[in-house]
Image (cartoon, rainbow, N blue to C red):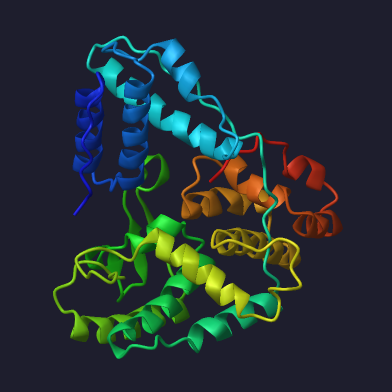
Length: 324
């Protein structure tokens, strides 16, 4: 059940309308609802009483706080952009903030083969202390492999429903992911086999659960924040944790999948310009530039392209960085 906040500003009815629309479209819209509650309080505290969103309000809201990074600030503003777009769709002329590209670009940590092996050894030997939570040891083994083996996003794995996992044919149906796009993701045979074995066990314990990876409360999926925390805990148990200048995040598994896939194509002499549209669709990117960006920012990966392809400067274009 989603948490229902009480909105009291002059924009309360529109905030509630946006949230209802998003949830009706299948989005959880929980974190966004929380930020919109903060915005609602901000309007009240700063005596903004107009029934429309004006530029002055957005400019005040967009001021970067001393305790937050620019990426988080931009995210806050993006939620108000969605609210303004919603209000304009109702015929209410509200100021629409421009899209702001993040100015802080973090070079991801690409896990080496040894780091991947060590990480999955930790995952595979994990067992919760309480027997009631032993099922999570199975869930983590599959979840973390889907991030790397299929290059899925954090929320895409957590929100998988049983009906969207074809365990016989090894196909995942990703619904309403980033950019409101749906796509099919095909799993390798060994990953499909792992999913089949996992589902036989979990369905015998929770036969009526609609989520492929149920959380502690079984009528909800496993939470994204829980997976973030678990990744960090597992990584800290590897011998590489103390030797790494910048600890990887769970998203690094998706980055590593892309880099390793493209590296292997280059080593095998497969033309990138032929395969990139397929990889881009597989990842759910809106264009191949987004996929190239994953690869282009990693020096280790780009060296392989230079070694294998004298035209690498033409193959990989400069693109505007953005977050996937």
